[in-house]
Length: 188
Image 1 (cartoon, rainbow, N blue to C red):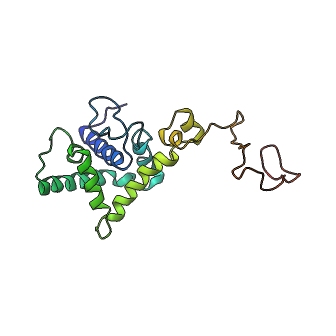
Image 2 (spheres, one colour):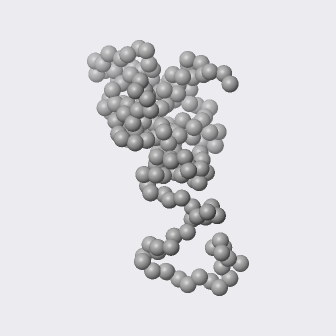
């Protein structure tokens, strides 16, 4: 397996920084620049935002290079507008302080911004990676300690791989089981 090119590394860092702005998490290692460390626990990046974005099923995969380039161009313009000096050793969006990343994303996703739909779609996939682990089977995500599913309290399935809930939501059964219901809960 080949090591990623510098351009691929920069793209990944920029997209990770965006995902971390949407759902922040703690740094993965002390020198982590993409993840700002603005919140305890795992955020969108640890939840697999990049894996989800790179999955062909999202329909965004082919445009990720363009997303990263555009985000970095917006970061340069934002920095110039606000008199910020950016560290040139990392992509411009990554170099922004966390608060400024959030302010820029707020501008890009605001009503009336001409690119709003693009940035909202990227934000939605960052949320989806955290909220549902859409790129993984739920059992695998739970077994791996997926941060979003763990935070939501999603429990492990029964040994047969099915989820059953012996405590009813309303404190009582809402209906009697049909007599032909199979042990898996399916109608016969």
